[in-house]
Image 1 (cartoon, rainbow, N blue to C red):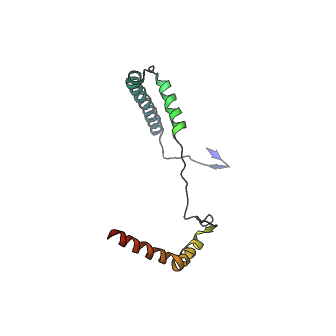
Image 2 (tube, one colour):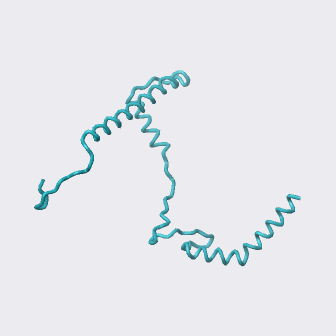
Image 3 (cartoon, rainbow, N blue to C red):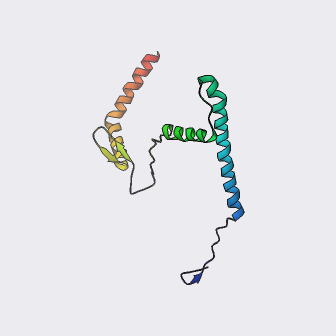
Length: 129
Protein backbone atom coordinates (compact mmCIF):
# COMPACT_ATOMS: atom_id res chain seq x y z
CA UNK A 1 0.00 0.00 0.00
CA UNK A 2 1.37 3.40 -0.91
CA UNK A 3 0.85 6.19 1.55
CA UNK A 4 2.36 9.63 1.12
CA UNK A 5 4.56 8.34 -1.68
CA UNK A 6 6.12 5.46 0.24
CA UNK A 7 5.43 1.82 0.90
CA UNK A 8 3.78 1.25 4.23
CA UNK A 9 2.96 -2.13 5.66
CA UNK A 10 0.27 -2.31 8.27
CA UNK A 11 1.25 -5.00 10.75
CA UNK A 12 -0.70 -4.75 13.97
CA UNK A 13 0.44 -8.17 15.14
CA UNK A 14 -3.19 -9.26 15.52
CA UNK A 15 -4.40 -11.96 13.18
CA UNK A 16 -7.91 -12.01 11.78
CA UNK A 17 -8.66 -15.27 13.55
CA UNK A 18 -7.83 -13.65 16.91
CA UNK A 19 -10.31 -10.86 16.24
CA UNK A 20 -13.00 -13.35 15.25
CA UNK A 21 -12.34 -15.39 18.42
CA UNK A 22 -12.65 -12.23 20.53
CA UNK A 23 -15.94 -11.26 18.87
CA UNK A 24 -17.33 -14.77 19.38
CA UNK A 25 -16.19 -14.77 23.01
CA UNK A 26 -17.82 -11.37 23.63
CA UNK A 27 -21.06 -12.53 21.97
CA UNK A 28 -21.00 -15.70 24.06
CA UNK A 29 -20.48 -13.74 27.27
CA UNK A 30 -23.30 -11.38 26.27
CA UNK A 31 -25.62 -14.35 25.71
CA UNK A 32 -24.64 -16.11 28.94
CA UNK A 33 -25.21 -13.00 31.07
CA UNK A 34 -28.57 -12.35 29.45
CA UNK A 35 -29.72 -15.94 29.73
CA UNK A 36 -28.56 -16.16 33.35
CA UNK A 37 -30.42 -12.98 34.29
CA UNK A 38 -33.55 -14.11 32.43
CA UNK A 39 -33.45 -17.54 34.06
CA UNK A 40 -32.98 -16.12 37.57
CA UNK A 41 -35.78 -13.61 37.04
CA UNK A 42 -38.17 -16.21 35.66
CA UNK A 43 -37.31 -18.59 38.50
CA UNK A 44 -37.62 -16.15 41.41
CA UNK A 45 -39.70 -13.09 40.58
CA UNK A 46 -42.98 -14.66 39.38
CA UNK A 47 -43.20 -16.90 42.41
CA UNK A 48 -42.08 -14.42 45.06
CA UNK A 49 -43.62 -11.18 43.76
CA UNK A 50 -46.22 -12.43 41.27
CA UNK A 51 -44.51 -10.73 38.31
CA UNK A 52 -44.61 -11.93 34.71
CA UNK A 53 -41.83 -13.93 33.13
CA UNK A 54 -39.51 -11.96 30.85
CA UNK A 55 -37.77 -12.56 27.53
CA UNK A 56 -34.06 -12.41 26.81
CA UNK A 57 -34.26 -8.84 25.45
CA UNK A 58 -36.43 -7.67 28.35
CA UNK A 59 -33.82 -9.09 30.72
CA UNK A 60 -31.09 -7.12 29.01
CA UNK A 61 -33.29 -4.03 29.12
CA UNK A 62 -33.67 -4.46 32.87
CA UNK A 63 -29.90 -4.92 33.28
CA UNK A 64 -29.30 -1.70 31.34
CA UNK A 65 -31.91 0.15 33.38
CA UNK A 66 -30.40 -1.07 36.64
CA UNK A 67 -26.95 0.00 35.43
CA UNK A 68 -28.21 3.48 34.65
CA UNK A 69 -30.06 3.85 37.95
CA UNK A 70 -27.62 2.26 40.39
CA UNK A 71 -24.20 2.97 38.84
CA UNK A 72 -23.29 6.32 40.29
CA UNK A 73 -19.56 6.99 40.36
CA UNK A 74 -18.82 9.82 42.77
CA UNK A 75 -15.13 9.14 43.21
CA UNK A 76 -12.64 11.94 42.81
CA UNK A 77 -9.59 11.05 40.82
CA UNK A 78 -6.46 12.90 41.88
CA UNK A 79 -3.16 12.70 40.07
CA UNK A 80 -0.67 13.52 42.82
CA UNK A 81 2.33 13.31 40.48
CA UNK A 82 1.15 16.09 38.21
CA UNK A 83 3.06 19.27 39.12
CA UNK A 84 0.80 21.64 37.20
CA UNK A 85 -2.25 20.67 39.27
CA UNK A 86 -1.17 20.24 42.91
CA UNK A 87 -3.42 18.72 45.54
CA UNK A 88 -5.37 21.35 47.41
CA UNK A 89 -5.91 21.22 51.16
CA UNK A 90 -9.14 22.72 52.47
CA UNK A 91 -8.98 24.46 55.84
CA UNK A 92 -11.62 26.49 57.65
CA UNK A 93 -10.37 29.76 56.23
CA UNK A 94 -8.77 29.05 52.91
CA UNK A 95 -7.54 26.61 50.32
CA UNK A 96 -3.77 26.28 50.32
CA UNK A 97 -1.26 24.50 48.15
CA UNK A 98 0.12 21.18 49.41
CA UNK A 99 3.58 22.60 50.24
CA UNK A 100 2.04 25.41 52.29
CA UNK A 101 -0.11 22.90 54.16
CA UNK A 102 2.95 21.09 55.49
CA UNK A 103 4.39 24.35 56.82
CA UNK A 104 1.01 25.32 58.32
CA UNK A 105 0.74 21.95 60.06
CA UNK A 106 4.23 22.27 61.57
CA UNK A 107 3.39 25.77 62.83
CA UNK A 108 0.05 24.62 64.28
CA UNK A 109 1.64 21.58 65.94
CA UNK A 110 4.31 23.70 67.58
CA UNK A 111 1.85 26.37 68.75
CA UNK A 112 -1.30 24.41 69.66
CA UNK A 113 -1.32 20.77 68.56
CA UNK A 114 1.14 19.40 71.06
CA UNK A 115 -0.77 21.01 73.95
CA UNK A 116 -4.07 19.55 72.69
CA UNK A 117 -2.46 16.13 72.41
CA UNK A 118 -1.04 16.30 75.94
CA UNK A 119 -4.49 17.27 77.28
CA UNK A 120 -6.12 14.42 75.36
CA UNK A 121 -3.54 11.95 76.60
CA UNK A 122 -3.97 13.03 80.22
CA UNK A 123 -7.78 12.75 79.95
CA UNK A 124 -7.48 9.34 78.32
CA UNK A 125 -5.15 8.04 81.06
CA UNK A 126 -7.51 9.35 83.78
CA UNK A 127 -10.56 7.70 82.20
CA UNK A 128 -8.75 4.35 81.92
CA UNK A 129 -7.94 4.30 85.65
